Length: 421
Length: 157
Image (spheres, one colour):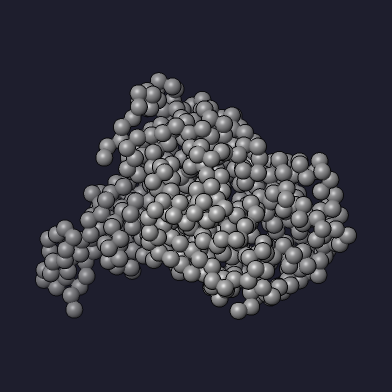
């Protein structure tokens, strides 16, 4: 099937809207042909991961677009950057890195993207609505937008998301099309206790296990009666899109395209059924820990970026207590959430505890950790998945409560109570 | 040296020439040692853009340096920054010599499309069908041709 362009697509490709639009459209057309799209479709908004500084090439790309006069043509938010714009110098970030990462941030601002600088853009006012066609980057945000909000996005990689935002067009493929949103894999939970189902620690571990088995397929979770919160679904999706590349899951009776199991599969039969037992989950949880001793240098929370509700829930755990002087306690979040937390007086408790807050970025996307920080503890499956390779650090996964207890006592305290088979 | 046939083995003298006919996604030719991954890989957090080492510590190729090799990987997974990591590795000259996938992987293709656009350089990207991917001989010297053919020679026993 050959790609058919609209008149306006062809005019953009011919350069009639300027050289930046032409460059973006030529990349989109080339990708549409490779992906076998028959036509392009229009999007209403975009979320850009391309602003993350990786090296000279990502900066060159951004500045080339700016030099050619690029501007986004739909409302566009920005994902994490390569540096905390205003707070990088409190950490071990090399000045040259910070300088180039900031130049790359400025380039995307110059294209008129909104400086949200968060991997959880759905925690800002720029939240897509059900059925919206969108072009989002950031794997954890894509799975949230598709699954929890019912918006429609493919997994947009860095470098392509901005082409979509500049032209307002994307290849009409994959999860943009209703027929591709039907479930493929059925996941059932076997003999999981209600205590575990209610705990925040359950969802990242479940997501990690499902991502390994489901790959990139559409997942349907049949667990009627279990009603995870938005933050729990955020953690579930982020884990699935780290160990695998799940971009859409349906939770029967909860998410918007799955009022019933038949609805979630659009009347088709599942191609595979996966039963998840406590034993499977206990093993998956072990994957997320690489530490060999109880040494603890840093607790880090907030991948995806902490929400206001997660901050609110943290306060009673730390109030009146103090983090051990040898341990750093870091929360990564977005500027918007930090501002809201400040307004309602949540930050004081964090600072009194000895916590630090980093915005705009996270430990995986900026070289902020000094060499002495060797051993991390986190409640995030995404941090736990990537830290050993990307940062060459040891990591332990645990509940938020266990992270706090460990920070106070100065050494890793694991609470395996809910996971004993 | 025997003639090369499409998608089948032919025994001539004391060697067998094997050919797989793939789809050339990004055209080019390369020769080198093949490293075959059984699992998908996120290049961000999975490929060190300086050394070319596989750094995903849960991946079966963890610790293997593949930058001077031809890398076969079923596809990408995980992070959307995979494209930026491959682009940067290309720009620094630290990408694999060629990449072979099972089915078309749009993330890898995009990185190479942008590398062509920005730096006028690229590496071959070939997509195989899953059954053909399973025949790839890990550890062998192979050739990737501009038209998507993958060839290697095996001595007969």
